[in-house]
Image (tube, rainbow, N blue to C red):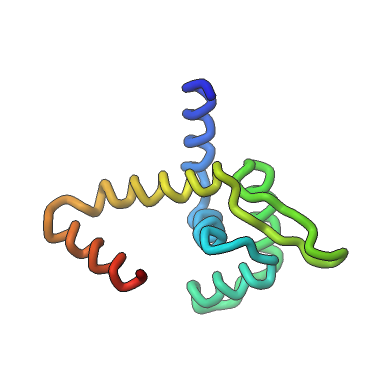
Amino acid sequence: MSEAQTLTESSTARDLTAFQRNILIVLTEEPMYGLAIKRELENYYDEEVNHGRLYPNLDTLVERGLVEKSELDKRTNQYGLTQAGLEAVEDSFAWSLSKFVTDDERAEQVRALIGKHN
């Protein structure tokens, strides 16, 4: 992959909305069908996520090559993270951490958070 392609793909991933990034984060766990993604997001936002918001954003992520869509059955699609999608999540975390971890105390806070989830 050329340097120009890498820059374009990261720029595209960095242009995602917070909602789209949260969809990618949900999909890092495992591929899911739309209603399962919707439930996960509703748990996070503590409010209803409308189909009219979720599915167009999923379609955008598929178009950008960050999510792969496959058919589970004639009525249900499954969505899974692509390698580019995983790299977008990693890039977002790396950038956030580079801003947050400014000293040893904050680094320890991050280690403690990670320890809670292992």
